[in-house]
Image 1 (spheres, rainbow, N blue to C red):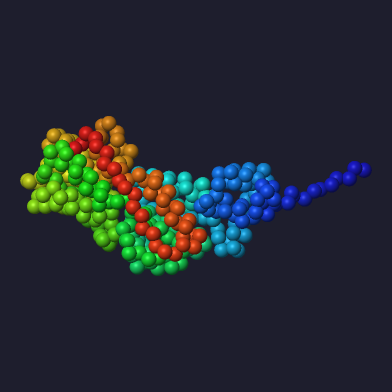
Image 2 (image 1 turned 45 degrees about the vertical axis):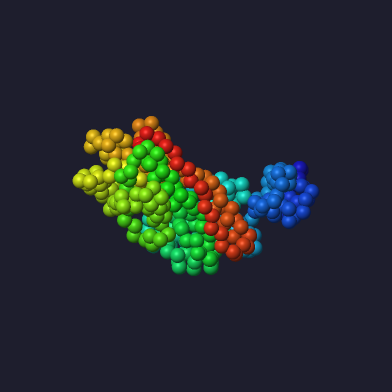
Length: 343
């Protein structure tokens, strides 16, 4: 009778067997796995080839026992904003190169939802959190930074000690938009803002408003500077009513620098629907240089923030935090003005 031999499963590859196969140290494999800085392309290729050959996959349980799960929480305020989506794409691209995995949550512009998601990310022992346009205030973020590495995007708090910030230089961006208007002969230029329910000091819209006011002062137009507020945020109906109020002003400004493409595009559309010539009667610029701004039928002049670079830089700072850096870092990515037909 033939004897059937039942063999057990092949031994699971470990970081040590990967190191032996690649002919490098365990420490070198560890550096490649966590995407540490200073790893040469040659070393990375050698280790990754061994990982592929051996089918090595780090154990989540083992990672947890070592105090690391190799997961990063990415929390954004809204998935409808195309700029924020591009930031997350840049962040995720960098995370993939580091072997960390991103778990994404959406706060829906509500601080209580955001707080619950952050608490869950901490409970699930994620290694760090990337907060994109957070609704939480400064003291709350400082408290979170005591528990887990945190980096924020689109939150201006240069005095933060327990978390890092990465932003477009929003003041410079608004100044570029005003200069774009000035170069086309406009002098009656207003800034279109929105009613902000949180801490205005940390909001990107506030930074852009300050940049607008500075640019108007530099041009000797401080006496003509106007900040116009639009009621409502993400709800389209109140925005349309607010835009109608702007367009119906008896002394409507000749040009409007709008704080975001999310407001500039519907304002431009509303003006055209009402028969207002853009830019003949009303010049408009936005901010974010979202894909819709570049559509020929839209042609919105806008400020580009380089969202992919912002996302990548934020992940770099977060990985540094995870690796033990405690000194705060506050970075700015320079913006660029993209002129089109709307101004």
